[in-house]
Length: 478
Image 1 (cartoon, rainbow, N blue to C red):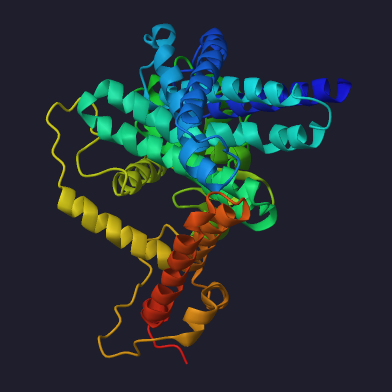
Image 2 (image 1 turned 30 degrees about the vertical axis):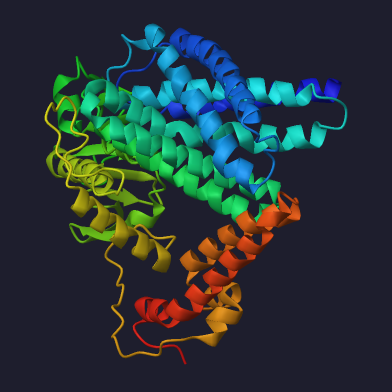
């Protein structure tokens, strides 16, 4: 039991770290710690009790085995995500006065997920001797994953409070959370840790960051960098950072917020900061939380070479210092905020005008939504790891070869070899789902139907393999 106690303690510490990490995205109005603690306790207990009730209902309906592909996708994922969502609603009397910006929904949803995960880990730990290794796995990844699954639901919950006509978003968010949660459990039950588990972890984490960026960018309390400077009360002169533009080392008016700080140079009216503070300015004022290294380019100013992040800032990598013009740099930051909002609004989860806050009349063009969803799915099949919609998807001509024997006989290897990873992942999920039914011996009468479905999948791969290859490369396979 000492090992179990240690692992539960580690689980709690990791959970607190995850909440503090998510709370760090609450840039504009911090949530009270005691409200977060209360939601973690009450939401965690409520969600676990509700999940027990739903599992009992599933057992009553004849579903007695959950640790297989069917149980992962259609029982565990929906039951646990629905329990967390309802538990967040049960906590509304605690947080009703605090829910005043989109990121608040995400933070309190994360608190519910933390409470659920901690109680679940404790229950696993007390099942008996020999569970230490399973609990170690849960300690390391399950708490962060539980939180990541539910981020979208937290954002949708807040938007639904502001605009009750946007209830379909909450349904989409629940389906998304249930599906990702189910795929995660499916991978664990089938033992595919090295490849599929890391793919799901990375994809879920990236999506969570996107939702967080969107929520922060939509905050009604967000200020631009220029507004922050103009509203700053009594900036004080402090020891000056050297201005790389004019060389001044004199005292400068200093502006601070948490860990970021920058100064105004009186000689040239440029603003100067350390490289670290310029990165923090992007995180705080541009609502971007992903790594910025990929956006660094070379820039020239007054004949000197610098590094620039996006644009309109100039950094000396050797000196670890930089400078910027307030007006032009603020414009860059606002463009990034707007891009974050536009990119999210174009997602298939966000149909046109569905989620404008406090908008009473909501119209949904379902044909347009279906068409955009089809294009998005086709793009995902060709480029599953890229969100860049500008990548070319070629249209196959009608007179091409109609059948591909390699794609029929070994579709998993053929599509993987040609780097058409979207189809490979779909085939992998199909194989895991139906293959596990036969592996666990669930109702052997269905095995013929499962084999028929797997055969139909291969026939579909052989029939469409050439067209999918053309869509990816703009030519027929050799």
